[in-house]
Image 1: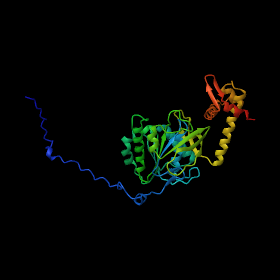
Image 2: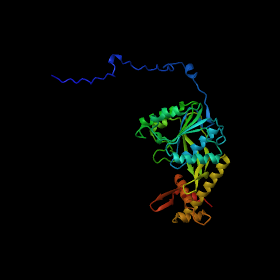
Image 3: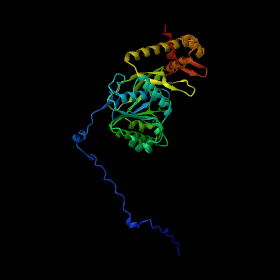
Image 4: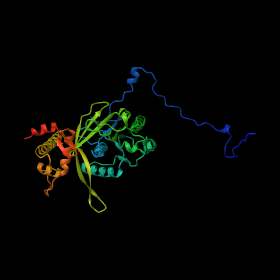
Amino acid sequence: MPLVLSPPPDDDCPPLGDITPPIRPAPTPGPPLVETASEFLSRYIPVDWVIDGLLIRGYVYGLTSRPNHGKTTVATAISLHVACGEPFAGAEVQGGNVLMLLGENAENSRLMLIAAAQHLDLSTSNVEIVSTAAPLEGILEDVIAGCRRDDYALVVVDSSAAYYSGGDENDNVQAGEHARTLRRLTSLPGRPAVLVCCHPTKAADRENMYPRGGSAFLAEIDTNLTIWASDGTIELSHNKVRGPVIDALSLRVELVTLQGYVDRKARPVQAPVASPMTDVQAAIAHKATVEADNRLLFALLHHPKESLAEWARLCGWLTAANLPEKYKVSRALVRLQTDKLVSKSRHGWYLTSAGKSEAEQID
């Protein structure tokens, strides 16, 4: 005879017949599956720029660059201009509240926010911060519930990786779901633009600056803005646009000293700040960079076996104490390598055939 186990008696457990199934709200009706063109077109929402020619409400943007090329610096400057309604690079700004998710490096972001607010003379009063890094899918409802203002113009996510909800950032399915989760941030009051700082794909160069996360992530976002830094200037451009075409912008990066803040040893604290450049300023900066690169090309042509220090001396790059500024040589070499004018072997740097041709034309 089989053994039958009965559950222990529980006076608090109601009979099965008394359990009432939960009442679920009826789904909100959407547009019909098939509709006329006039019905479809009647739901048009006018394009609403946050920054004229750059950011549109309700759109999701990637902001992609190599490490240390200025993603956070640029995103911070954009955030403060939007929060204060101040023109950015000469473009009109429709200001509003800004939400910044700063989970990648909250302490570094704090310094940049202080420095930018002081240097650009812009207020942080319309900025809200989430400093916790966590899978966005798990905290999204709490984030939305914690936002109590009635008009958000911009949400900055720094970075995509810090809030990734999947286990493999290069998995197409997971990356697509992550992008759709990021898009839900546009549901905040005001339909804010969402600007997501992204790490690039492996070995990305200036012409191939796409966000890590598989093609599904790139397909899901509306626009991919790109950053390329060179000798204190940043080019803000794009390689995917959904909507009106965006003009490239130039920004200057300065290392500024924070006022009223010191380290544990009472020494000054510094942080980088990005500020837009005019067309004239950008042209002057570009000319200076080309001249610096030409100096190094000339030195490499006539003194190919020298050290970084000696090349710096040949170029006239010396400190007030007459020490060679080797970092200027290193930066110029990276620029020239990007342009395929120099290359590097185990024996050191050398001119390519294209670089030699360029150098021979320099007076």
